[in-house]
Image (cartoon, rainbow, N blue to C red; front, side):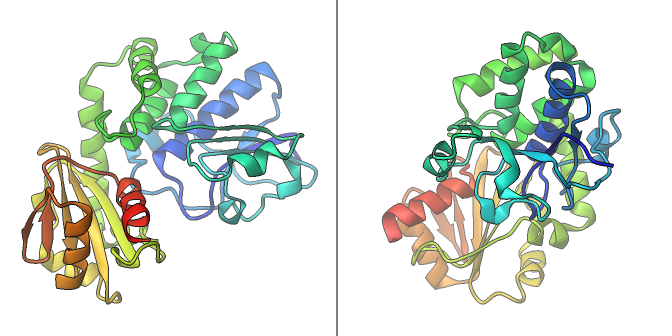
Length: 305
């Protein structure tokens, strides 16, 4: 079986922003342009997609023969990270919020690209429904998926990457799905429960392992939980046993701050240069607010080269 269009994302893992965007955009395209469109991936769905979302009636399709298909990519624009089956010459559309490849895709006249600084791709997908005059297609289940993607990528709408567009999308999706404010807490609690089943796997499955700055270690983890006490130093030593230099950004939602754990004094010194306002303890820097890993990396590049 072949299909006219395949909506897919990156190949490392699927977080909720990519997962929800793929499924939701498939539903919109089915209605507006291509009833044969599918959404699937060969990569593993991570812990940001807990059972409460995986068990909804909207799910990913099973992979099929991609010969002759065109590809719609969401939440990724760097070709190095496309799913393995994607033919770059057959890409027809890119929807992403990660900077860096705007000019690359703009130069490809046959590709419709939308790469812009918003908190979540789910916000962009919601706006596509509105632009198409099909917001009424968003039922409770689709609203849950899209809201979860927005909440996860903006850390409950409190990260510095949150835009007015994200806030507006969240507000309107709540109305469309008839959802209460409790949904966000329920979602993050479900994610925490999934992560605690295999904390090491959850951290290693979302690891950034590349050199970007002399002020940062090569291995940088991140985990979002309700309270930082669930992540102990003993656990972290086991998680990072194969890394000489490492750090992890433990985002505590209930405390509203980041706990930056690291391997030792040298890494801690680099972090203190990046976040002079933080309060340090042994191999730990506590911030008064929380930051996302992408913000840590940006500071590292800007200040440490």
